[in-house]
Amino acid sequence: MGRGNTLVAKSLPQGLPMSAVPVSRSVGPHALRRALLAMLLGVVLYGAFAVWRGVGKMGDELTRFRWWAFAAACALAFGNYLLRWLKWEFYLARLNIRGVGKVDSFLTFLSGFVLTVTPGKVGEVFKSVVLFQIHGVPVARTAPVVVAERVTDVIGIVTLIVLGSLGFSGGLVWAGLGSAAVVVLLVVVSNRGLSHSLIALIETGPGPLKRIGPKLLEAYDSLATLVRLPNLIVPTVLSIGAWSLECTALWVILRGLGQSTRPGLATFFYATSTLAGALVPVPGGLGVTEASLQGQLQELGHVTPAASTAAMILVRFATLWFAVLVGFVSLSALKRRYPSLLGGRKGPVP
Image (tube, rainbow, N blue to C red; front, side, top):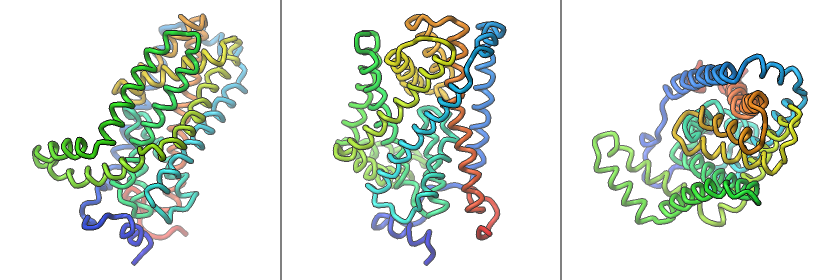
């Protein structure tokens, strides 16, 4: 039995046939095309923002901008990815998924950023498909990791909103919304009877819904393991640290534009805008995050319209779009190591 098949045998629960493993080779090309379309949408959106706010005035801000700040923001964003990769490693260990090397694990995790522009970043389940194709780990085992990541991300971001809103009452509304969403999700997931009833209800639906019932049951068992209290503490701490780095990236860019916005306010602005973009079902929070961030910078941070537009665009390129670029580079590296990945040519790596 080969390496991949051995891992499948270890990972599949008793009685679940290989045919139940959800994977499609068409996922890759279609998903990448959607990512490219979202990137085009982002470019158009930012171009519209620039024209609306005045290209000339924003150009003046960029002329004076200290570009070391953009490099520092990208480095802080990459620090975010490193901490979140540690969270991914933590979850794989908790699910008893062994035999995935650190390099493959790191590149697989980063490859998920190719689809970070999907609503709520759920497209990052793409990395589960990649892990199946290179190591045979069933998608249904690792897909719940994406949900667990989002849960701990929301907890971390809500924590940062609370910290940033100290002495600033407006942030507690977003903190309350985020906390409520987390509580509802945890209540549903922690209640096995309620979750199984919801899955049974789905199985009563037409053909496709009926077929995914067994896969949802397997996914639920994995998710229930990941969101138990002992398994929430370390990932939540990592999430707080990771997202605080991206909040700092906004502050650094504002400093590069000559603004004197306090770190606490920058944290509040970035965290609330990120949460708003995550709660609204649009790709990557496009439009929602930008509008929220720019509005808060102007109204609460007293940043000029031109400077706020420049800061918004720069921080989004240093975080969201830098992540997509890192995802494509990582996926290309994996394709070199595993040429058959996503339906490519067969054969060993030379």
